[in-house]
Amino acid sequence: MTEISILDLVRIREGSDARHALDHARDLARHAEGWGYRRFWMAEHHNMSGIASAATSVAISHVAAGTTSIRVGAGGIMLPNHSPLVIAEQFGTLEALFPGRIDLGLGRAPGTDQPTLRALRRAPSSADSFPQDVLELQMYLGPVMEGQRIRAVPGANSRVPLWILGSSTFGAALAAELGLPYAFASHFAPDALDLALQIYRARFKPSEQLGTSYATVGVNIIAAETDDEARRLATTQQMSVADIFRGARGLSHPPVDNIDDYWTPMEKAQASRMLACSIVGSPDTVRKGMEQLQQRTGADEFIIVSDVFDHAKRLHSYELIAEIARG
Image (cartoon, rainbow, N blue to C red; front, side, top):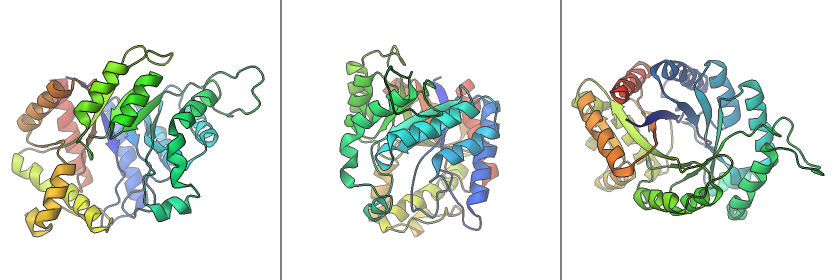
């Protein structure tokens, strides 16, 4: 089966705090390393009380320091929020500390709402220069050119591998043009998955970093001993998505016996569309779902979100998934 990796949202649970969320991320990565996961990514989100990875490069350092071989990185950094030079310095520093283990995934969305974007001192139009910013960042991470006056220190000549992230065909076309690996965010925005992969593969141009296309597909997978138990664990994520539509993004909720007591029919329909790329169930159910998704997408890699409230049960979910992937 395809390679497997983890996207951890570093969720803060009810009754807990950010320190516990970050330590749980580190503990999960340590276990994942032993289970054969290829990489462990965290994402940049701002002004969200239930997510602890806003300072993404700092969170990456915390996780990388607790592991020895798994790749650790950003899935992703929202580049319109930042100067390319600053990101080159941050990830150049991470590469100096943890050589050969750092990934830098780049997104075009702000990862937050408009008031928070203003607080970040970034204009909404900054996303328009995303392709140029990616090239500038790539330049800072590459070899120093003759006469180059602005350098990333650390960062220059580190060649931290870049990824393009996306939930539309824009990112697919850009990744193909630049010859970069592509990760599609089908775990929360699945509508354009098939078309985006088709465009990426059809238009891919080899580059110094990557000779052939490499596509990663985001997928929600929750595994437990039985289908019923997995469906119950999945209500935590379903409630979080319902909260998004209510404009009430908060802490992660413990699972409930009947999700229909929590959300309205409209919220159920919205959440079901957003979470359409999900596999929930026993090992047999998850195996079949992963095989079907692989056959549909031809993904080189799955990056998996297993949004389970209880840390021990989340570990067990990822362990079961790894056993399935090993066949």
